Length: 430
Image (tube, rainbow, N blue to C red; front, top):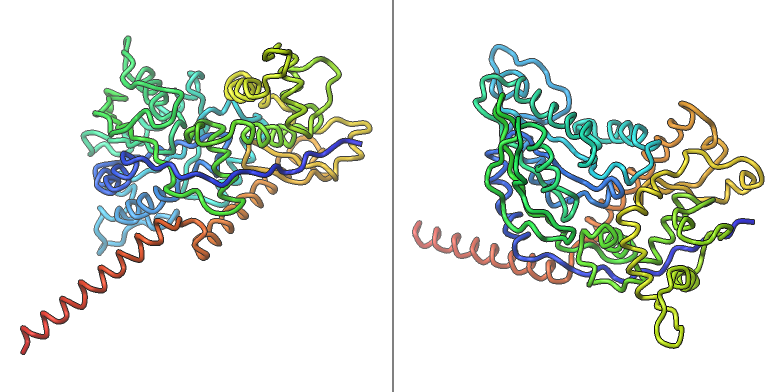
């Protein structure tokens, strides 16, 4: 019978919110007032975890101010200002969610995910892309150009790119610029594999000449506090694995333990890491045993023949971030038939690192039946994510002790100011 790896113990989530992130968060409302299209980048492996809820509020307010109160646009009545309605002469107000690095997730889950998101968030346009795939970049470039062409009265269109650290914002803009501007275009933005490289708003970059489309790059913004308890701990480890948060804040073996668990969920029959080990190796459920075998396999030894498991752990995480991610994305949609099928009800299966479900008989069907089943499982995961976020907001689990003290201080200052204003008004009236 197949072994099942238990969920690993994870360290508490650290706080990493440098000053440049705080400055950009404060600047965002003013930037949105000059923005026509928001491109929000997320990582395809973490389509839910890489949502920054701090940006959500500012974007929602921006859309509401431009008359985008619902997904259904009613034609204006004779007594209503035309500028209040999107698509009837009003200001451009579009939001596109780009799931970057699509080549790191299994292709069979992309369409079910799009449909699940359309069901749960009908006002969001979802586009999957890989910066190394010209077809994806061309499709996104054409999408932006078509939005600009639908608004011929605007002399130009401005695009603001936002998202968490290291989701590929600068790389995507370089690719869009190269696709949209004829001739050879030099690399406009510097990129880095480390989070926090972009620390300020970029100068305007031209993405298209006819119609005129400009863009701004922005710093990646982490959540000020990732949350308490298991949810916050898992969120932090996920972001550290994609290098969205400083890796030095984590013990590398904790990252490996979670990565091993997730790869076992993604493909419980033949996890991607087995391609690194001798033929006939079985899935691992113990992280120390796995790292020792990996160290032996690649001759990572210390003096006296001791296995260098720390070096093996660092190597393994880097492998997964590159070619290993491509291997893990090649997992087939259906579980194998035969003896393993009898254990299917006991298995957990997933897509990326944000979706996990229990396998049942319906998941092994083919064609539209399988896709519909995956979509249903994904919708359940999205509902659970929304419920958990609401619960954290109600309980205060998403707010750090420092933030609580700051909020309390601000409330006291506001009360004092209100009392002083009332006293002054009373003395003036007397």
